[in-house]
Image (cartoon, rainbow, N blue to C red):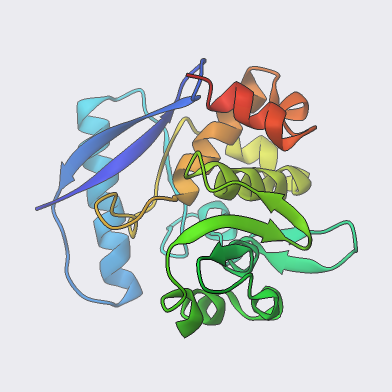
Length: 215
């Protein structure tokens, strides 16, 4: 057995709540094994709350939409017209005690950017700098959520289908080992969209912070 969080949309800040769910775990690195875990997790979550309409947000999703929404696949188009993946933006924007940001990671494939050795050898993260724009390291998930939600906002063709769901998972995310999670970002996006707040919070990072992270 294993545990993973399910991120469920809510009407008020922080616009999601997470529920830890026990499920049968299927070991192995094959995609088929990961997808068995996803199905097991969703079945367990649905047994607990039949009202949940769940979508896995990762390359292991059994739904094409969930695969497109993986941070490894979802793209962000910067005002300079360059296109980057969310994962590469996040990794390339990290500022450490002893180095960074490593801007060259912007143009690297997501899996290469994430595994760059400099990210683990430069000390603790002290902030973020995305192409000259600085962002704080607190709240800890704010920059990741900001970049991810901005990227998703650019892909209007995905919004209608996405709004059919109210709960999201990422089978690879373990809150004991990681902080940022694409499934959490999607839950916030959907909740803000349903509350009519999405365009407002995306006007400015400080506005986003004050609305989503208040209290």
